[in-house]
Each structure stands twice: as C-alpha cells, then as structure tokens.
Amino acid sequence: MTMPPENTNSTDSENPAEQKNGMPRVIVIDDNQALRLLFEGLNDLDGYPSFRFTNNPFEGLDWIRAGMADVVITDIDMPQMSGLDVTRTVFKFDPLLPVIALTGMAHDPTVEANCLEAGVRYFLAKPVRHQQLLSAIHAVYRHAAHVRTQRNDLNALRIAQAALKQSEKRFRDVAGCSADWIWETDSEMCYTFLSKGITQVLGYLPEEMAGHSIYENMISRTQDGAIQEHQQKIEDRKQLRDIVVWSIGKDNRAVCTRRNGVPMYDDKGEFCGYRGIDRDITEEIQLEEEARALYREREMFFQASEHAPHAVVITDLDARILYLNKSFEKLYGYTKEEGIGKTPRILNPGIAAYRDLGISEEEYHALFSGVWKAIKDPKVGYWEGEMPNIASDGKVIWVHLIISGIRNAKGEITAYMGMPIDITERHETEMRIRVECYQALAELAEARDNETGEHLKRMSLYVVQFGKLLNLPQKEISDMEIFAPLHDIGKVGISDSILLAPRRLSDEEFVIMKTHTTIGHEILAGRPTMEIAALMVRHHHERWDGRGYPDGLKETEIPLCARILALCDVYDALRSCRPYKKSWTHEKSIEVIREGRGTHFDPELADLMLENQELFCSIFDKYADPEAHETDGTNQ
Image 1 (cartoon, rainbow, N blue to C red):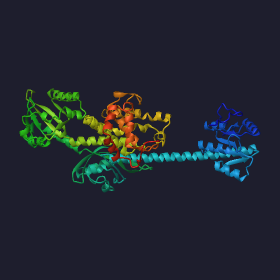
Image 2 (spheres, helix red, strand yellow):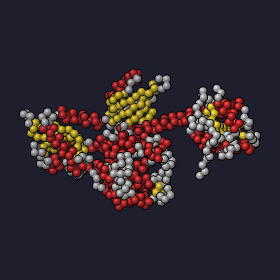
Image 3 (tube, rainbow, N blue to C red):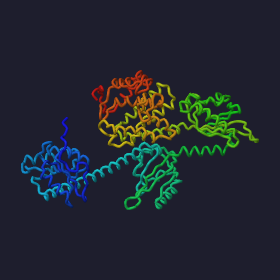
Image 4 (cartoon, one colour):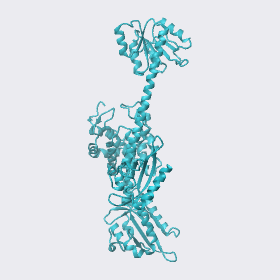
C-alpha cells in the first residue's frame, strides 16, 4: 500500500477551522502558490469566508472527514491525486458537500464532461477573480443548505409516518389477540370497529355488528339506564369507567361485561365517537352470586345440598367422608358408595403432581398446614383458595375450594364441610390469556428484528424436547416453552442501525448488541411469574467455559434453563439465514455443537442433543423459514 506524501505546505493544520461570522468554511486543495496568497489575503478581511489551504489532497480529505468544511475548492490537475478523484472521495463521505473545481481548461468539452461525471456542479477558469470566486462559494453553499433542509424535512416526515403506521399496527395486533372486546363508534354510537374478541364474548363476527348501535344487544331492563349514562358521560366529556352491561349473545345467552371507554373528538373539538373495551365478567358475576347464595343458605344446607349446583362433601373429625352430593359425583366421578368412608386424600394428586405444577415439596406441606390452621382458628374458621384435585379417571381439575369447620353451640368443631367449585376452564383461559400476552411481547421484539415467527415456534419446541429428555417437572417445561420466544426481548433497546445491519457488526457495535441480555433482564426481573424468563434472557449467551456474557458465569453457575436455551439458539441460528450468511445444513450445525461441547456448551446437554439430533432436525425442517436455503456452511 502506497502512503500519501506528507504535506509540506499547509495553513493552520493543527487547529480546526471555525466559522467566521456565520460565513462558510472553505477547504482549498491546490498546488498553485499565487492562488494560496489570494486566499490567505482574503482570510484577513471581514465579510469573507474562512479559508484553509493545502497542496496535499490527502490532508484536505482528512479535514473534510473531520467536519471542517462547508465548501471544497480543488484544482483539477494535481500530481498526487486529481481533483476529480478528490471530488469522488468527498461525495462518498458527504454527497451534499459542494465542490468547486478550478481549471485552466474550462472551455474544453472533455474537461467539462469529466467534471459533471465526477459530481462537480460548479467550476471556474484560472486565473480566478476573487469576486467571481466569492459569488460561486455563496451560490453553492446556499444551494447545499437548501437541499439539506429539504432532505431533513423529508426524513422527519418519513419517520413520523413510519411511527404512526407502527403504532396503528401495534394497536391492531393487540386488539386481534386480546380475548377482550375492543371497539370504536361514531358520534351516533354505532360501531365502526370491533375486534375479534366480540366473537368470544357475544358470538358475533365483527362484520356482523359493524354499523349497529352499541345499545342494540343490551337486555331491555338495563337499556334505558345505560343509554342515559352514556349520554351523560358524553355531555360531561368523561370516560366510561367500569360500567356493568348485560347483553344477549348470538346464542341468546345473557352475557355480562365490564365496559370502559373514552370519548373521541375531532380537530374542531366536536364529539365524534367512543373507543372502548368490554371484558366478559359473566363467570365472575355468576360465581360471586352463587357463593353468596351458598353462605346465605348455610342453615338450610342439609335439606338443599342434594340439589346444590356445586359439589358438597362432609367429613368427620378423622377426615372420613360422611356425605357427598350429586355434583360431587359428577365433578370427581366417584359414586356415593365409592366415596363414603374414604378420606379426601383420594382427591389429592400428590406431591409429584404438585411438583409438575411448579409447587415444591416445602410449599406443598406449607399449603396444607395453612389450610388446617385457618380452619381450626376460631377467629377464621374456614379456608378458601384454589388448588389442583384429581378425579377418579386420573384427570387433574382445578377447583376453587371452601373448607369450613361445622361447629356446635359451644363453638367446638364436630365435622368439616368442603365445597369445591370447578374452575378448570377459567384457569385454562387465564393461562391462555397469559401465554397470548407473552407471545405478543415476543412478537413486539420480533417486529424490530430479522427473526421470524417460525424461529420463535422452533425455540419453544426445542426447549420442550430437552425438558422431556431430562424428565423435568411439567411446570418447568411449560415455563421454558412459554418464555423461550422472549429470549431476545432486550433487542427492543438496541438501535435499528445495529439491530438491522445487513452485515457483520463491528467490535463497537457488538459491545452494544450484547447489552440486549441485561436490557431484557431489567424488563422482566422482579416479576414472580416471569422469574425463569428473566434468567433465560440474561444468561442465554453465557458459555460453559466462563467466556460468555454478560456475567461470565461458568458450568453449573449458569441456570439450567439458560444452558438449554443457549444450545438451542446456536443450533437454530446456524441453520437459519442471516443478512450476512446463508443457512447451514443439519450435519454441519451438529458438527459445530460437537466442537463446542465442554467449552461453549454444557457437555451433558450437548451429548443429549447429539444422541437425539434427529428430533431437533425434524423440528427445524417442519417449521423452517420459507426463504431458507441450506449450504454446507463453508466459506461463510
């Protein structure tokens, strides 16, 4: 490589140029001594631009890269580098920086054509008169400033439009996946938008209710009051806050919702509709009403218990079942003959089942200890909560259970009564909503990355496969399945210029990229239900040999869930396309896993993948990205 010659004739080369009274800063690259004297003379005059002069094109380009120029003047014919090459180099750095070319052959068509091809839009013939030069400098400077302003305005408009589009997309995405019913109306309170949640709540498709009045499906006994309340809120410009509304569903079923909404106004301040959300609280209302009814009719229990809508069981002081009603038989599958004389332990799925649900042995014993402590405490007298039970066919069901002591006139406990209410469906619905929220969060991060929905699905399936091979508790497997797609949630804090760069990152950029682990951990930490998610997010780039990040943990210091995720993430990344690489074959990817055994990866987990590699290969092949094109991984 030939180094540029040292400059032997420059002015003020040690200090950056400064603007003089708002005048442009001009870099002059020319080996003409007379011209230099002209510029140096102008430097001493007020009302003139500030000039820096050099006969070394390389030094001049260094000044330009340092941001010291508003206008560049260069001679066309120079021994070290031609003025046209200088111009091309300038435009690669800043396409809007104006360049004025000086030439003794201004009227030569070839010279003119070469200048235009290089990007010169203004050139002057030597010898140059200073007034002519000043006019040219100001002309190109004003034109460049005008173009920059227009471009900045256009970029700002594009950014605003993109942000608005992204905001609307997020709203539609949330509305589309929410089990709640999100809606908008016009000023006549007729629907203009309904989310898919209306199908789950009332059974109607959004298009079936579009254009209909918001009051159309309300039960008649509440309609007048609801309309009056809505209108009063509109007149007062207030929100609809926790309004209970009864409606008739498509199947003629009464549905109760809690409604919240905000009025919308146009640019003139005139009311133009409402935007709101309805949440189905039918089951909640029904459960509250039924529980209150059971307490009110406690004294009449024995006469009415056989026909009670919920299971009832009574035991003696030794916990032997004395009575169970028909609902109990239906819920658990035990007949009276099979249940009476047994203890409620037949309904306990056991410590192993609780372990699979994420409840430790210590927590299990503490739970039942707390149950009996509350029941025997005369100031409390009962225990109420939710727990898993097991039916006669082995099916686990979730119940909202009330256990109370039956006391005599002296306040002594003579028996125990339990009333389990089946909440399995509600429990599953809550879990589904929770999972959908986590999925939406993962998709939010995915929307800023180059990853695909198939990648998130594969990550869940990989960790489930590992969990099964390791015989982990079902709760732990389920948590890993739910939270694996969140492993890169921290990338929401990484700038697009780095995150979406279609190339390998520089060392400085990679340092920034690595912070996605700690950013993601900060987002999730401190939330009890997301404890395992926070660990997976923070530590999935740690290495078995301690050379990973962010904490440099090694071996079993790294949480098991993160060790599993690290292995799965690398395998999937190798087999996936990236802006800077094509996908690798399964065989080449497995070879990388084998090479990283005991250094990058937990050796036992690596062996487990190698022994069962066809399972992981089949997962990738089944859910491969559409654009994936496998190579053998060489020369990439």
